[in-house]
Length: 387
Length: 185
Image (cartoon, rainbow over all chains, first blue to last red; front, side):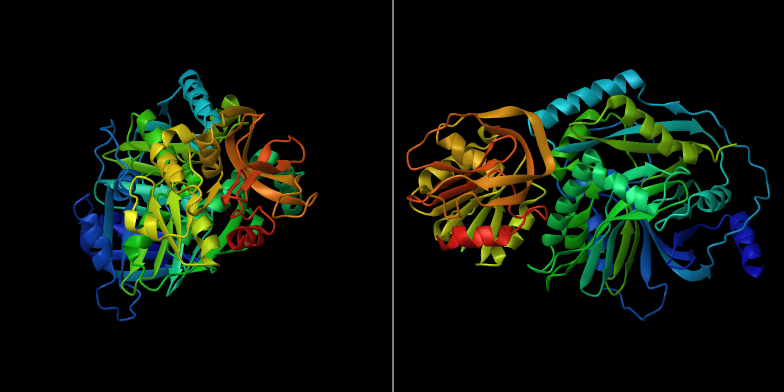
């Protein structure tokens, strides 16, 4: 009960805070002593210095925050032309002084009833989606990309109670990489299922997801696995991501140590099954945090393959800034350990503008209508939070 | 030393790790070639990559310069790069194989590998070799069991080898053995 009041008081106090899913509950970080807004100029220095600070084994000896999509492109020398959109920071990290553990059952009653707007506009209609889809299919035929993800964006103007949204979201869609950030002029609410980097001492793992199946009464985990194995399109997409992530890890790991630890397994979530693999490797001796971030980000499974040429195709196509979408949220500890996810299934609310971005993959045998609809299904769980 | 020329692919570092089982490996982007490493290398490997061989004139000129002087190995796009330099035509195929596991068969008596042996391999290619293809000292030594598409070429005289499939993919059985045999040839 004390903790519940704590959440309500904290939320009312307008003090920035972050909540991140932990193994057996949630961790809340607050009382930030530093806030670093990232730019192309300071990002490398920030990452390089983040693990040079003295690690006193305190649970708050870390920087927590996010890298947006654009800054991660720029970090690996992929340029993006000027795009439209919110003028939202490219990345923000915080140094917390307080960490509090919560159980999985976050309960919070929103005190004021902030009325959020239920109506959304979409930045790509079915016709223009289809046009881009066909264009990318041609690029697959000529071998410029093997798989590419088209992003669509749902937007509205709305005031939201971020903590209320997050509590309701994790109640219905608990996810291993769920997080929220609330700061003075923005909030992010996410039920990301995908871990991109889990680095402890000299070992690193990544857990790509490729393949999603909606739950139904007839399905169970065994049947879902049989579905994925039989489905050639899902299998090919997944294979490609596994080989790509093996290669990304191989840039920073010792030869012979990169292994598929869990090959094509099914994970069960409230409304869906995911087709997941776990890959790990032992880091080379002189690899820095910056090397790791540049090798792994932006996470390949949400971009397509091969990464660089596919990013270029996407960036030429997309007129609007992705902001946080397909960036990464997580932390770097002062001892160099790291945990980062891929920011998907997320709401960004900035100066009362909300946006929800979703994407689905184009491979040679995908169908424009199915993928457009899959995008809508992915966004719906988040749009349903607005009432 | 083995010098791997990267065509900015997302599979190249799997190739690097695979070859590292057998020798020291250096790897650079095709547009950032280090001439010293190139001269020093005993083996040159052309990596997989997006697009078509005609997009990579630098790789073509490296091939032409070192053919017969060093062992050359091409994988996927690298395989096509070799064929393209040998006046082969690289064309789009109707069925596209990305992340696909296929069975292939050794079809030649002159191959380093045992004739009629079948094994599973991982494939990532939009384009293929147009046939008939002939070039002096070159032989197509493996084909896809179902589509009959050319999957490997060997030129045991000038030590040029190429695979349309990916020996480094987790989908390929005995990929390490394959590379070991080529390197010791």
